[in-house]
Amino acid sequence: MMYNENAITAFERRYRANFINSLGGFKSLVLIVTKNSDGSENLATLSSLFHLGADPALCGIVLRPATMFSSTLDNILDQKWYTINHVSPAFVHQAHQCSAKYPKGVSEFEKVGLTPEYLEEIPVPFVGESKIKFACNFVQKTAIELNGTTLIIGRITTAFVPDDYIKADGYIDIEEAGTVTTSGLDSYHTTSRIERLPYARP
Amino acid sequence: MMYNENAITAFERRYRANFINSLGGFKSLVLIVTKNSDGSENLATLSSLFHLGADPALCGIVLRPATMFSSTLDNILDQKWYTINHVSPAFVHQAHQCSAKYPKGVSEFEKVGLTPEYLEEIPVPFVGESKIKFACNFVQKTAIELNGTTLIIGRITTAFVPDDYIKADGYIDIEEAGTVTTSGLDSYHTTSRIERLPYARP
Image (cartoon, rainbow over all chains, first blue to last red; front, side, top):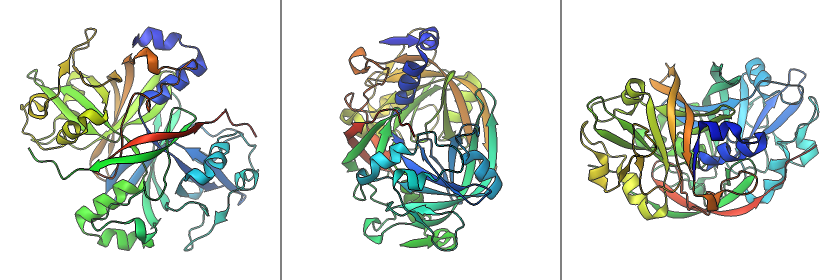
C-alpha cells in the first residue's frame, strides 16, 4: 500500500520500471518520425509527449540518449524536423513493435508494416495510417543530468486533422477519431467520454 | 484538414487553446496539492504530468507563472514538497472545479468539497478521495522563455497504491483503479484496455 523511496529503490529493475511508468496515469501514445543524416527514416513509439502552450503552439518530449539502436535524439538535433502521429486500435501492434531495438539504418516502417507519407514539403514523413498528426520544428533542448535524458521542445508547424473531428469550439474529438492512450510500458486503451465540462468559475 | 502555422496563429484565442490542447492526445489528469507560505493548502488540476525516469523515480510538470489566482509554482519553489493525486469518475466534477481561479488563501479543498489527508509525515496533504497518489520533492526547474512557463522536475519519494491494483510484474492497473484521463481543456474519459503486449523484439 505505502512505498517509500527505499522500497521503490529496492524494487527489481523491470518491476520498478513498470510501477513508476504506471504511477503517472494515462499517457499520450504517438509515433515519432525522424530522419537519419543518411536520409533513412526512423520511427519510434513515444509516451512522453506533453502540452507546453498554444500561443505559440509548443510541445515537449523526453528522449533517452542516442545509442546504436535509437537515433531519434540525434536526428532531431541534426535535422530539426520531426512528426508526431496518433495511434488507432487498428495498428496498435505495429506501433508497439516500433519500440523494438532495430539497428540504425533499418527502416522501422518496413519492419513493422506502416506507411511513410510525405505531406506539404515537410522533410520528414508522417505515418500514413494515422488520422491525426502534426509536424514539429526543434526549438530548444534541456539536459536532465540526473538520468541522462533530454527534454526537447518543438514548435507545432502543421497539423493534419480530419474536419469531422473538429468541434465548433476548436476541440478535436480524439476519442471519436479512435486515438489510443497508454499506461505503464505496454498497456493500450481506448476511451469512453464521461463528459465535457463548462469553463470552471469560482 | 491541413492547418499550417499561419492558420493556427489566426485561430481565435480560445479556439486555438482547445485545438492545440487536444492535438497532443490523451493526458494524465491529476490533482496537485501544495502549501502556501502561510500554511494554507492549495489544490489545482494538472494535465501536464510526464514520466522522466524510473531510477531514480522522477516526473515532470509544466506550470504557468504564479499569479494572484495560482500559487502552485511559488509554493513548490518555496516549500519543495507537492503531492500528485489520481482522479476517479466519482469526483471528476470536483477535480474540474479546482481549475477555477480562486483567490490565494482560499482553500480549494473546502470550496470544491474534497478532503485533505496527511500521510507519513509528508508536509503537504494528499487528496483523501484519490486511490493512487504520490509525494514529490522538488529537484530542478527550467524556464521556457518562449511562453513564460516553467518545467518542474521532482523526485517521487512516497507512493500510495492499493495492493489489489499492483500486478506481479509491478504494473499498476490504473484502469481497474478507475483513473480518469483527459483530452483538450475540459473532456474527461474512462478507458477500456485493448491489451498489454509483450516486450517488443526485432
